[in-house]
Image: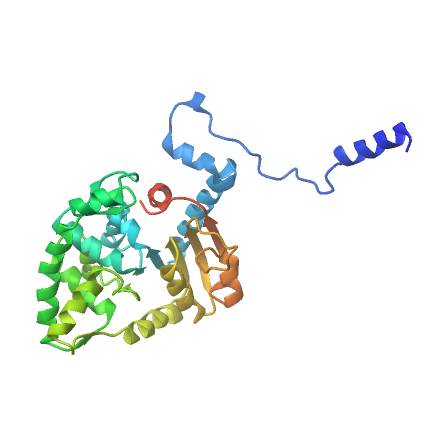
Length: 326
């Protein structure tokens, strides 16, 4: 091939002009610190920053629309978030009745109650498990939970279920959580405010943690005591079906994510959805699935406003709440 021909082909491919007019597209631009430090404007600038910064601002915008349209808002979070300081943000949302339904895991219930008795402590990710075990300390990431917290929780919880078992033998998880919120009677508790504000809390895996451990031991004393999940599945599905519009805010994944999405399948899909997690979908997990997969199941409407933000909820969710709820 002649040199001139090769040059012509190379230029044609490298210097290819766009076939579409992008004149009206958003320009990528970051925050200019020459204007000083304005945290409000820094977060606003994320929209034109790109990557997950842009998705974060989309999440904020979607949640604002949920609230403007008076959607029934489903908030889901995994237990490790209650282990962290996000617990205080969830409490704020419940205290001011800014969400309508909560779904969490077993640890997401008991750790809120335990923190009303004794606090968790900041530790290190790198502290050896053997060393901590010998010291009677449980590690959640870089958060330390001395085992005496669970001993004190047992002293609160077991007499309570013993008292409840004398009233009736079976309770749904949401009913038990409501009673826990009432009995702990502490304004620092998420579930105290859920009890006060009649916000239903669902925990399909309530026995996966210390609550389950205590129930295991108590069953040797009173085998008739039961936690029955059947009433709760009807209750959460009925809430979704009868809602005018629904919005999903799901932090983390696993059973919490699926339980909320599955309830919304019964209404043919939610109008709004915000996911915050780091899970990937290459293995076919529901945990890693983007909102568009939920569309295929009828859990989110095809025309819904939806976004997945990849990142750590302990960093992202306080910013979301500051911009969308305060």
